[in-house]
Amino acid sequence: MKIAVCVKYVPEANAPKRIDPETKRLDRSVDGALNPFDVHAVEEALRIKETSGDGEVVLVSLGTERTLEALRRALAMGADRSVLVADDAAAGSDLVATSRVLSRALEREQPDLVLFGQQASDSDGAVLWAAVADLLHMPLVSQAAELALTDGRARAKRQTEFGYDVIEAPLPAVIAVSDAINEPRYPSLKGIMGAKRKPQETVSLTDLGLDGEDAGEAGSLTEVYALLDPPARGDSLKIEDTGDAAEQIVEFLADRRLL
Amino acid sequence: MDLDLSEEHELVRSTVREFALERLAPVAEELDREERFPYEIVAELAQLGLMGMPIPEEYGGAGTDTLSYAIAVEELTRIDSSVAITMAAHTSLGTMPIYLFGTEEQKREWLPRLASGEGLAAFGLTEPGAGSDAGATRTRAERRDGTWVVNGSKIFITNAGTDISACVTITALTGEGEISNIIVPNGTPGYEISAPMKKIGWHASDTRELSFDDCAVPEGNLLGPRGSGYHQFLEILDGGRISVAAMGVGLAQGAYDLAYDYAREREQFGRPISKFQAVQFKLADMATEIEAGRALVCKAAWLKDQGRPFAKEAAMAKLYTGELSNRAANWSLQIHGGYGYMEEYAISRLYRDQKILEIGEGTNEVQRMVIARHLGL
Image (cartoon, rainbow over all chains, first blue to last red; front, side, top):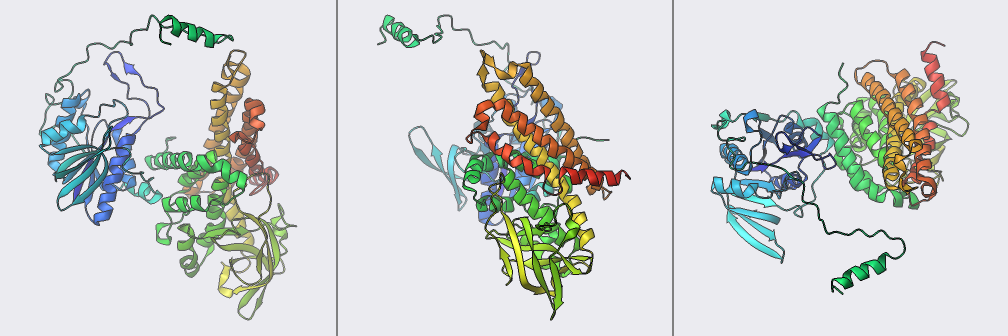
């Protein structure tokens, strides 16, 4: 069984988030890390491999060379190898362009299963897996809180607002796992020492049979025109407590007949 | 010259930091209060390969360099000194003598069990009457019927009395003025271990007094050539100083982290106290000294990894970071004010855990003696 896990390099949780007014893109020069949601997908892939006793876990990512830092972390956890699509022409890819590049990289791998984390912690889109599944013509299950594979089928328990859906799909399939699916392991010291020796392939758009028109801003269907702060709320009232705050709040609510 | 850590080193740091924050931070206060040895944490450290970092893979270790090891020790201490010393004493003092001076047979017998963290190792050097003057060892080992029969006592020994303690390597007189190291397995008749000693800090680490009463171990438990014990323990202490120095940096960093967060939250006179120069200067000084201390530790570890002499730098790092951790813990508690004196604030634990870093593995004064000797004085 070959499992491909799509992962993203994102700014670290406590790194300041800033949008560059020039490019209208997120400033990615800060310290980064493996997207915490993707760690669950990597963990699930490793568990599937360990349970079945054989198989291969391949990491697939689109990003700059710095993405290798995040990939090494997943390799240290136990993934077998990585494929990074790094190309200046891919900078600024929107959802459509990113899904095009990733699905092409996945086609090259021909995996039996494609795993995603539920979202990326920088953009929080939670839709990329759907676009990739569509391009690959594969069935998709999102928010999988449990996953079992038997006889060429995936059976996933999908977390919803009202309970669980149990969904079966034939393989190959795309599964986006929820962060409730597992408790990810820490990379072991042996894993860390061995990560560098694992195959880490970096490919360009050309290597995937794509060109500059397919990715980056040229390949994107959306364009950011402007970025604005949310409008200030003009009618808000701030009450400082000088001993009578409770009375003021009651009065405020009573005036509006909310009490 | 390249002052960047390699990717492996960065990965070691981020992994151990994450582990410490997620697994140690929530239980550190409880372990300290209950003075409970953290078996479950040691098992987790073992699973990650942290109980035998610098031991080669062929003997069951992780095969890392000294720098990776120092980084891991620093990150553990940043959150919990008791856990850090358990790991560091086991590695630098307990396991290393067997790795460095053991025969192939001794290595095969002991290292896989120790480096995997299944068993804990201790090192018994200090005696009630032989502290800084470690050469004044009185414990004796006599050869009798193919065994070494040990009589004497050791004090302040880390890791000797836990349920998973496997052995202690002790220094003993095997003749007039002749010191040798001997491995004594736990459970050997005549090897008695006291109740846990009561300490100011390091409450969750195991510290015991050991006594040997006609305790006979096989002849084959002698470590290296007879009479080489003095040089062996000096070498062990040189290496161990790097890890205790890393603890100094970790403790100072932990104290700084707590002070930094507290100063930004705590409001007095209508603004966070971090806006007052008196507090800012303390934090600025702490951050600066921590940076300097970390550089010293890295240098000593790097020299050792290059196979170059490192004893002077290790002593300097140990001395500087020991005193630095004292200042940092003191300032951090001062920034916390009255709350810092309360047990529910972590800084109170770090404050208690700090002092031993200026005493263990050579006092500040002994470090100065070692440095002065290296300066040719």
